[in-house]
Image (cartoon, rainbow, N blue to C red; front, side, top):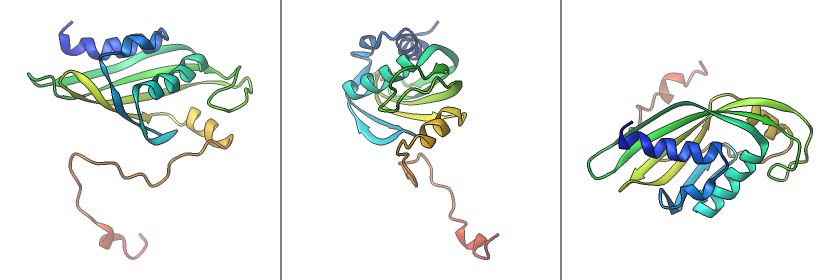
Length: 163
């Protein structure tokens, strides 16, 4: 395994085993965090607390895919896609337990500077858990417009007739 794969495996392994202190030094103290459950969050402590709720909810977290592309200075981007096997048997982010269980495929998009993760954007690949949270009143961010790598052409005039 190459060193570039080690960062993603370390982050995944710590999450899957609920050993979140292993993130110290590889995720920045002031990491920026965005997800369907909250936008504009910041800080490693907050991220560990948030992730701890997911490790409590999930009885197994599988690695589905990963990739990391870093330059010689340790700058770049990567992702970790994982499958949460969850069952809601105790409080989860303030939501009372229902016993409901399911699976959820999630992706952590990582921005890396000098070998340290400085930004994490979590994307839900399947709607099961997101819908479950939303139906229980979890406040979901709407109309979020994060910074992008490349802005596509504005074609709103092409759809002006409502099509």
